[in-house]
Length: 633
Image (cartoon, rainbow, N blue to C red; front, side, top):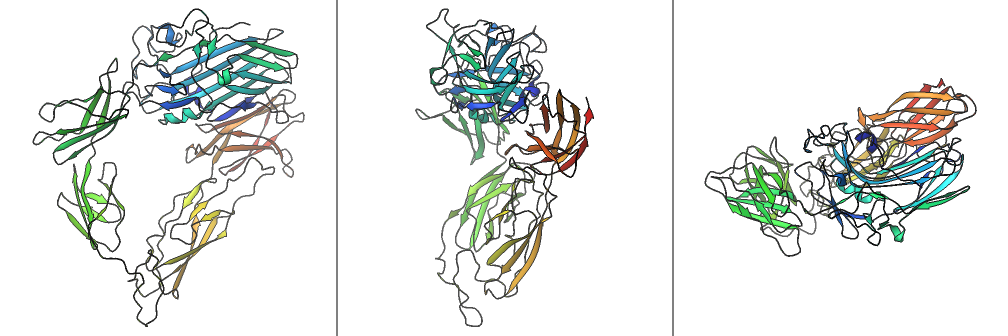
């Protein structure tokens, strides 16, 4: 057994494109057993606030309570940086100009030497990277990685690997090569998704084996050592298969134990001459930095055992701050968070039974109250309504939206029945969703514009602006069968099926338009209006960028699947199905592959079909069909 450092790492985004899926190479459709067989959920349990220094989480915490923070000191070998990882390794790391394209909260590596000169290499990591080649603000991602690469192992065999975070199998090709990569789950800015991976809890050097881990770290990435912390107490890397039964307890691991807690600034607003500031942190030493002539430096308060912090600060006359800076004084270096002030504060939203009164303080006017009207200044504005909303939503032309609960201050009880109509007949019970003063004519159906939906998604049709209707009946009249929910309301929901699925064996026929028929009735249930609705569907734009088949060696088909020029939704993942279309009358399914986060996909089979393929037909679960020629060799 030999063990070395993992070597120069690939470019950051290449490392991050496989989202929550297995990337299989060196396998055929017939024997593809390359997969994770034993998972390890729950190893990581919490993520810290994003650092104002670089935008990545200040720490991750595992199920044992250990917190690991970024190690970003180019001169500290414990951080594990290699030559070329930082643009200029002669000066300190700084964001974004001299920042690594990737780094690891923890990187775990181990190797097994196989008989005959082969090797199996394990890499486990909680990796931080960017969706761009260089460090770019706003493009930060963190994901959990499992990777095993095998070469010169027994050919055409299924190998079983076990490691501290689970088990997996890999099928080797005729050269004895195989590979599994599982990345979960890069999503820009959503750092909690990494908690759903199989990584964790953080491994540590075994204290029973000398030497001890360096102070402040769980291990030294330059030294192989025994470890603790594996699933069910298993702290080895092993392989079994035809003629193989090998294992090792030697790992290289990195990881800096977190001493800082960081902070997250959650809200800042101005009300009645006071600045209200909210933040969260595990620390108890948070402070709002004062601004001369506007407000004083003020410590934040919090309750024992709580991560919530708050400060109310008196403003100087005429003060109008637009940002607030909060500092965590217990961190070294001190961490900071800058909070933009809300540009709207709802001072009053009261309903007295007939009138909704709204008052708001804003940096600019008018303030739009969605579905109700506008406020032109700080004066209380009255709106006569029979039925108020539970909450109002307000925004200016440039600022974010804010919501506020409506307070009920008066009003009489709603009648239990609707007053009789003009003909003396009781029009029926008022179910709470009808208006007793509906116009006498037939309903006027009003349907909000529909945005295009993709196969495999859910869309809501909004007919709530329809006038004079108390009942709706929606039915599908055309297109692929959809699941129709809330079909007796003004806002039915359609679950559109995928164009193809994992169980699809023959190419799907083009879809007819998805059409619905709606019947709207007024309060008498005698006057009706009908309408037909077509749901626009936006299918995937497919392209094949590589298509080669060298008989007896390799089949390689790859390309892109984009929606509106960008990668489609990540959940559920888009699936690509590829058929042998050499005989168009009888296509044969070759395989299924996922689309990655930048819209790419690839099917590779070794040795591939024994008969020459000259054309393929490609379809995706998000729609779209493409036929492409396949080159020889």
